[in-house]
Amino acid sequence: MIRILSSALAASFLLVGAAQAQEAPSPGYGDWSFSFGGATDNRSKDASKSQGDAFVWGEAEWESDSGFFYVTPAFETIKASTGSELEVALAAGIRPEVAGFDLDLKAEHKWHVDANPGTDDDGWEFTADVKRSIGPASARLRLQYSPDSTGSTEAWTWVALRGGWDFTDKLTATAEVGRREQDNSVDYTGWNAGFTYALTSHIEAEVRYYDTDADPNNPQYADAVVAGLSFSF
Image 1 (spheres, one colour):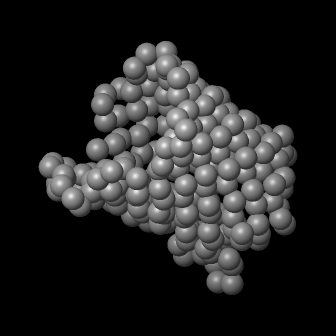
Image 2: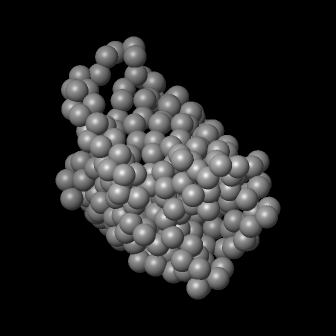
């Protein structure tokens, strides 16, 4: 685990160095942005991907000049049933606007690094977000699907509705409820609520409560208060 964390942290610093090198975007070639951070638990779809342990993550994003098309390589530390402690991903998507709604349509391929031999160590994930903001209020409907996930889980779907409110230009509260149904794994309903606060234009802190209606004795589905810090350039 220490070796995996060291590699992930080194990748984070490389992302920062690359970000600082992008002082002036090149017209006609799109723009790069970079972010990394860590939290006390790695929560995805309200379930833990790190068995309740802390994790680190990082990503880079290239966006076309129009903002319509983007590509994102990323990594995050995990504790998976495949034996892997590091997940890497490559995603591509588009961000159109339709009838006043912002859409984000993305296809992503994920790999579990150093997974146990014979385990299913990769999978596709497709995401469709529909977002709308009116004044300080915001809402997002998220639909996700995988035809064959990593590990023993096969096809799954996730549907979630999130609402948010900007109290100030720095402080935002959001709450979300979602439903996940999986072949060869647990079906559950999850929810979360919390706050994000912009410490600076590049640093954001977050505190969020997560819970599910699945087995509370399993750290993957147990409730938790998660604190995190992220940096973006």
